[in-house]
Length: 258
Ligand SMILES: Cc1cc2nc3c(=O)[nH]c(=O)nc-3n(C[C@H](O)[C@H](O)[C@H](O)COP(=O)(O)OP(=O)(O)OC[C@H]3O[C@@H](n4cnc5c(N)ncnc54)[C@H](O)[C@@H]3O)c2cc1C
Image 1 (tube, rainbow, N blue to C red):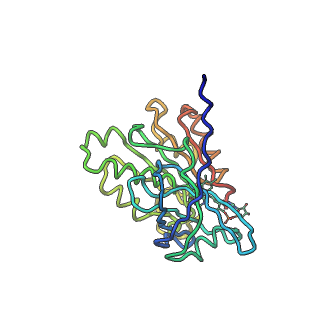
Image 2: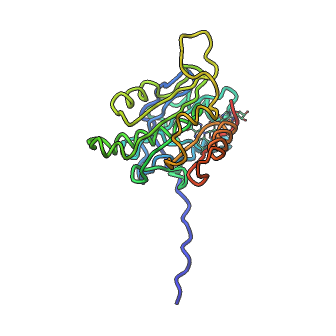
Image 3: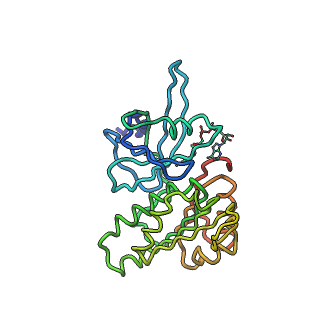
């Protein structure tokens, strides 16, 4: 007798309670959620959030998990789109003690663990930093107490494109991670910063930036690119044209450019 093929079980919807809703930048906030029965996640995965109106109208959106698998509390960081249906509600309306429905974790492709090794190259545009931050937080937690040689085996670089200095999400935390880890580099590029003293990169991510920061294809970095669709497509195709193995360039598209 042969066993019946396993049918994947649908991922259950769960109620999550908001423990905290804190500002990251003018347009983004982080929700820290308590999710009873949460099965754990891998850095890079996302959840679906479902909202139901009083008249029964329902809508769903995907949000990457910002927290490391090692952390208590599930963190989502949401950018408010002024004409959006869901993001203004999540950012402006949710308060401590409110509940929302979510299901996850979802996604088995755009994930990274310290066990996968390095080098690790991350490229983010805007809120595309969220799943990449989960990877950096996971890396920091997993390497806490590691020797210098163990850290050097998993070096990481982030190239992060934001509109302005004030719109850099997790800016202080990224600086703190770099300060305590010589094997992590964070490079910012600002596309709309005008009239300030910013002396760093001031353009969209391009070939010369990637040639300088992304390691050479010979070093076979694990690459993760996340952000608005046009940014992700431009960065991934530039990396592949530069000789990176397409199978090691993983992408997550958040949607149209703002
Ligand atoms: C796998 C995955 C993970 C995601 N993770 C995050 C996350 O961690 N944080 C986060 O803030 N968002 C994330 N997103 C985007 C999110 O799912 C929603 O698309 C976003 O919050 C807009 O929803 P809305 O209902 O407010 O806007 P909608 O009502 O859907 O759209 C309003 C307007 O904004 C445009 N728009 C839609 N999405 C975007 C976008 N991403 N950027 C710019 N313009 C857009 C639409 O074309 C429309 O003009 C993720 C998307 C995917 C697919």
